[in-house]
Length: 462
Image 1: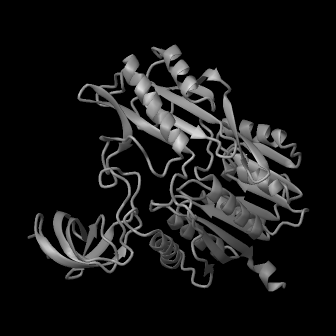
Image 2: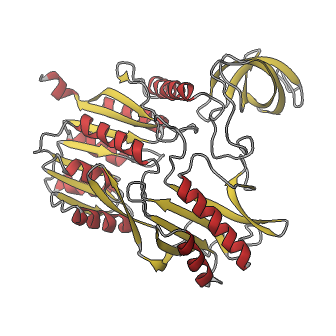
Image 3: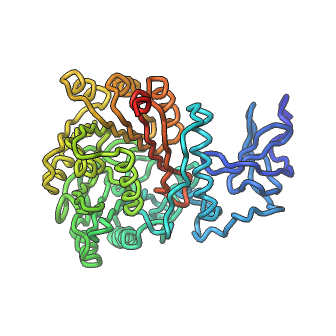
C-alpha cells in the first residue's frame, strides 16, 4: 500500500457517496482519501473496486449498490454504459436540474468568491430527449465493416450506434442511412492509426423550425468515390435534405473539420428560426444545438440586458450573429465581433436576411477589436459576452472594466471559467446580481449560465 494512501489497486471497499464531480462521477471518501466513481449518486452506499490511486485521490469502479438514491433511474439508452456522450441518464431529470444549480453555486463561491448573487433554479425542458439539432459521428472499421457511432468513454474506440435518444429523430435516421449507403457502396472508413481510408465523419444538422436538413461528409481525400450514389440515396430517402457538403481534412488530427469545404448538391446553407429571427447556417457555423432552450437562453439575455431601444451594445464572440440580431431588435445599435471570418460573413448575411440595419460586424479577436473600438470613441452601454470554454481573455476583461458599461451579460458554457472572470470584473468595479442556469444539454453534465452584472457606480446612484 502506497504511503499515506488507505486503499490499493483492486481492493474492494464499502463507501458512502456524498457528492458528484463536475463530470458526473460519484465522490466517496475512505479515511479522508477521495475516490471518484462513475455511475454513483450522492446518498448511495455501495461496494467499489479501486482502479487507480494517486497521491491525493483515486478512481474506483462501482461493484454493488447497497442503498439506492431516490433520484436513481434506469437509463433508457441501450449503450449508455459504454458511450461517452451522456453522463447523467441514471439521475432523474429533476435531480439533474438540482445538481446543475449546485455546480454553479459551488464554483461561484469557491472560485469566484461570490456569495451575494441570486442563483436561480435551473431552467429545464418539458421533454429532455431528442433535442439535439446536430450530430457528428466518427467513422471506422470494425471486423472489416464500416461502423459509425460515438467514442467509448475516455478512448477513441467507437461504439456502434443505431439510435441516439437525445438526437432529433430525422437527423438520427439520416446518419443511419448515410452509413448504410456508404457500406453498400464500399466506401472505405478512416483508419486513425494508419491515416488511411476515405470517410472520417458523418455530420447532419436540421433547422428544427423549418425542417431543412444538411448532410456533411468529412473525408481524408478530395476524391469521394460513389458520390453520385450517396447523393441519390440521401435525397431520395429524405426530401427535406437541402444541402449535401463535403469537407476535406487531410491532416492527422483530432479536429473534425479541415479547411476545404465544397457543396456536392443543393445549397451551401440551411435555414432556421429562433423567435422572429431567421438564420442561414453553413456547414461550419456555430449554432446552438438545442433550439427550444436557445430561445429560453436568449430571452434571459434580453431580460438581463434591459434594453429600452437607444443603447449601444457590444456582442463579443458573436458567431453568426445569433445573439446580436436578437439584441438589435431592442437596441439602438449592436456591434458584433468574432474571430472566425466566415462566421462574420454569415452574421452580415443574417442581418440582411432579417432586414436588420442597426448591427455592425467585424472579424478579429474580441480582445483586440473592442479596445480599438473604445479608442475610436465607441462606448457600450451594455456588453454581452459568450466566450468559448476557456472564458474571456484578460485584455477583454480589462477593456470592459475600462469601458464601464452599465451592464454586462455573461453567457457561459463553463461555470468554472465564468466564476474566475466574475471575480476579475467584481474587483474592477462591477457586481454580479443574478445568475440563471439553463439546461441546454439534458442527460449530460454540461450547463449553460447567464449572469447579469452591473456597474457598482450605477447601483449606487439609484
